[in-house]
Length: 503
Ligand code: NAP
Image (cartoon, rainbow, N blue to C red):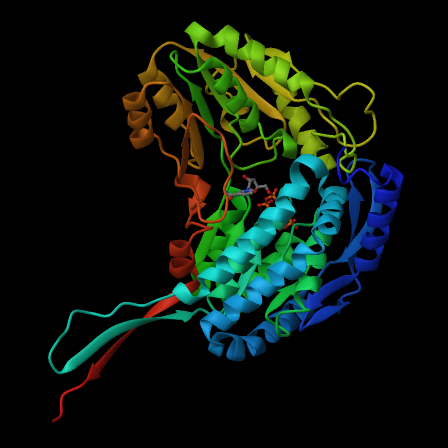
């Protein structure tokens, strides 16, 4: 029996809705949860029921200023704290969060629609893991010494940048927040983070909990609209680094804000990722990989989802048969239900977007919906949508080219590897790519010729601490989740020359 299945669904929803109300109207600034200065609010919805569960402050310039001021003040002592001491505090913060993991995960499921058993619970674990990982790495932020040079000592120091403005999307907020704050804080920076409008509550709860361990002002969270709070945060003169995850369109705007002040940006952006199965692939493994690549535990709302599926004609029918059987075996339901494997889409806006693309596919001559294309039976309220596979969509169609960011993928037959490789690369994106084959030279040929920052062979897994992640082309710039990326993106290099001669 599942160890978590002890309370009823109603009790779970009730408890987390009460928590949502407690957090409503609050931000985390200067050492604690407190009411925002603004009185303007926006609603937060439970996407599974379409009910309003709370509200969050629509922060403007006063709240942004106060959070950045708190972070600037804290930066002086935090950046001067010995690196291993900072790391120890981050690891203690991780331990502290660990004790609240289940509640954090439930709150996240309530606002995102991500299923607790398959997504939010794991994601909360990953959040803790990422904090621990970077806590352990804090003492590894080293400069270089130059070769011995008589009469001179030459070396570099890695310095913290200052206040980091972090902006994240709604699809996996716990993992995203950890990917931002853990390396930033370990490297001696302080942070002001803005979560997405749809999913600010679990983020606020995490930041509230962090205050029990971290000094005041080191980790702050404000809420608000992207074009208001997000823009103001990026444009604030004291914000010396912007770490952004979201769409390519907003990423481009963020880079403009950064250009005006000449500050560095890390941009983790969208993807439309090819998942290719060659004729010699292990059929069961490929079908499993395609299913995992659909990222159904997040209803396909994953930047790395393999949403352009190409299967060699020789095994197409066998693979598709297994994939369709797999899709129908998943249980769709309330995200907080212990039996649920697939939850619901995050918002009406995303739901409508998915429907628009499905309609476009319906109008496309030759296109055929293999499964889905509608709400799941019996789930008439909430943003539930059946996983949809579409075949026969031309490569030029927006269905094949745009990042839909929902439970939708296209499937195509191919016979020629060169043609499929060209098609796979014919996209403005370059985030992730996967290939299934038993032929190692073919796999390595693909690895070297595909334009993607995260390439997998014969498996589909997601990013984790210590496995560097990021894209190329319009999928962004910079990397996350590794020591090298922490040093590169959250510190700057100072060169020092000391005259050591006696005269
Ligand atoms: P989004 O619309 O780009 O929003 C992301 C964040 O940016 C939100 O907090 C948003 O605030 C804020 N924002 C919007 N306009 C802004 C502006 N003018 N200035 C500053 N901030 C602004 O993306 P989304 O719809 O939340 O998330 C989905 C996207 O994220 C997809 O493209 C997905 O591929 C990408 N993603 C990428 C990765 C990766 O690692 N590469 C991981 C996860 C997701 P509001 O909430 O108020 O709009």
